[in-house]
Amino acid sequence: MTIHTPASLQAKNRRLDRRLAEVNHVAACMRAGDALHLADRPSPHWALSTGATVTDAAARVLIANPNVVGVGDVLFDGMPSQTYRWKG
Image (cartoon, rainbow, N blue to C red; front, side, top):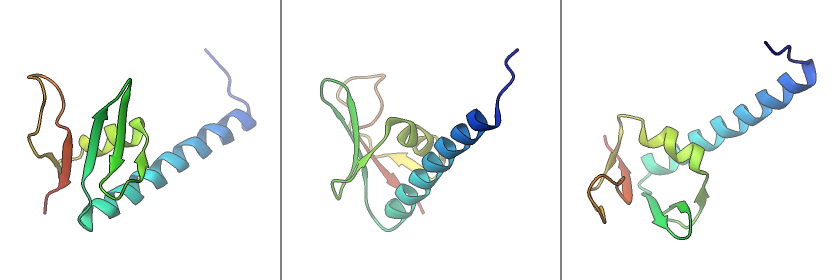
């Protein structure tokens, strides 16, 4: 069992706050009409239709939201959709 120090807890909370702020910002952009795109370059790369990049962690949280739906453009079966939009 690990005992966390106040400094390590503050750092963890700052990371979570940044991730939550990014998720909220991207969700607001998607509600306004932007789409979330996945590009398979050497590694997966997420971006909004405006060109703003989105971290992988924030994108994974968003696509798990029931209001975010895949548009259905998939290169191969069993892969995630390449475009996601806000439903509603």
